[in-house]
Amino acid sequence: MASDTVLVLNAGSSSLKYQLVQPDSGEVIASGVVERIGESGATVKHRRGDETHEFVGKIADHQEGLEKAFELFREAGHDLAEEGITAVGHRVVHGGPKFYRPTVVDDEVIAEINELEDLAPLHNPVNLLGIEAIRELLPDVPSVAVFDTAFFHDLPDHAATYAIDKDLAEAHDIRRYGFHGTSHEYVSQQTAEFLGADPESLNQIVLHLGNGASASAIEGGRPVETSMGLTPLEGLVMGTRSGDIDPGVVMYLRRAAGMDVDEIDAVLNRQSGLKGLCGENDFRALTERVEAGDPDATLAYNVYIHRLRKYVGAYMVTLGRTDAIVFTAGVGENAARVRTDAMAGLENFGIQLDAERNNSKSREARVISTDDSAVTVLVIPTNEELAIARQSVTALEARA
Image (cartoon, rainbow, N blue to C red; front, side):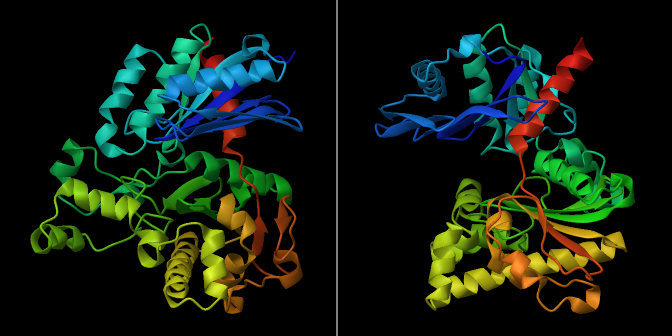
């Protein structure tokens, strides 16, 4: 029987990922994913050690998905009720102006997260579905909400403020919030540990590159800039999101194409980015098409790299001195070509990649720059689940 474990949930609109984590050691006791919730061909894949248990069938909602996952825990020979779970940690995307620490969930917190729906309409409602489902199934285990925006709560005012009407911004809580904060915080801390350096001595650029992508500039352990803004739409080119775009495009589409706000929102969030440019948001498939000479995929890739390089350059100026550039998340950790192209031709800025190190298939934290590179370039695997587990324990200890 395990003891002092945390169940971490990450709820999506039609999916639910989970891990059972031992926070001190970082051991993943079990993990799984529920996919295609609400459809007849739903699946649950549960892994514990070398064993995999699966369910295929209809799953009506997130609560039923969790029930099926709990059944697979028992099928694997371990009743979740006997796993010594001290907390359930939930990823919540938007904390708004109020939530910037891991927060023990109660009815009031749920109501306040619900009020933030307009700031993250694609994320917060489904995050709440996961919270409500687990409270029903494990009513005696405290739930803790860990917010993607928390790490960036104290951005400098000049970085957090948009140049729009001051009173309007204050009335509607419009500012740069930033996202993927759990990952940026964890990775920046791991970078300092890996380099044997005091976090307060390092200036870092962290590039979280997955289907969603964001960049941050971290000075002495504190973020001073980040690419995502009021919502997770701003910034880098992403799998299905446009990233930076002239706000006038929104008004133009309304007037010229007759599109309403919801239609424009759907285009920019779900039908843009790499998918909008070439119909493909799976980066492995995109790379295959680029290597085959596909012109649409090549343009999409080049736009992606161009935007990434713009942010690296801007953040180097923001920091004044850059000690480390760190790649993380699915694309950042695995796509050597992206790292090569993002850093190409930057020798005059003290950046030199080592091709052999960069092309290594290692999944471990590693330096990929040359020994004499003035800026250390690294790959540091992110582990948001472990970070959420540890923050959940911290929240409970603070409440005790």
